Length: 300
Image (cartoon, rainbow, N blue to C red; front, side, top):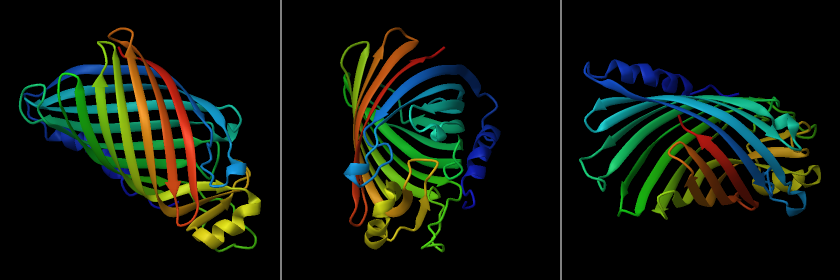
């Protein structure tokens, strides 16, 4: 496990921001949102070997509690704590709980609905997985910018850096010196979001994401030699308590295209659906996956 670089900074961010607030600043609202989400993937392990692709269905039950603080006429700070439980149908050793905190400072550059806005954000997550290799934490920070293009259309862009710390795995007997900390990973991504208001209750979005940095993938035991020869992974571990075979980490890139639909039944209760196409690329080995998400959330 690598040393956690950003966790301390993220956890210190809320008190530092609070300490710099003007005396006249006021809390404006509480945000409490329980949610339930179902997921399905046709390649949950991100393997580059089609014969080894594994479909899976899993679910998450979570709740977030946040507070919004008006720090200036056009600036708001949101502090949030999140707890989430996860359960898989087939791979129960991937079940777990995630505990997170986040801080976001949003500023609007003027008045009017079509004014540009920006939001600096930071998050820290404890990933409690029933699997030593994947247990650890994750931290990320970044910047979002956006504006309303018209009464119907909105655009935003997000640039972020992500670092994850995992546990140690099991080396192959023929390759005992190669690192096994597959989930000690870092990457950065750029996401572009174009949203359209279809009706008073329905919002649709198309999101394109490009990722650069380290990626993980799975391979059957019989194909480990192919992975080592073609990708020379920076970390590789046997995975008997996960997907089987081996998992490995390489320098690569990824792209994702996602369609999102959000339907508001009331001002508090809504339904979210998304379909996502993912592609990960190494030097020679690539993987593709499709993910479907369907969830409900209630905001008090």
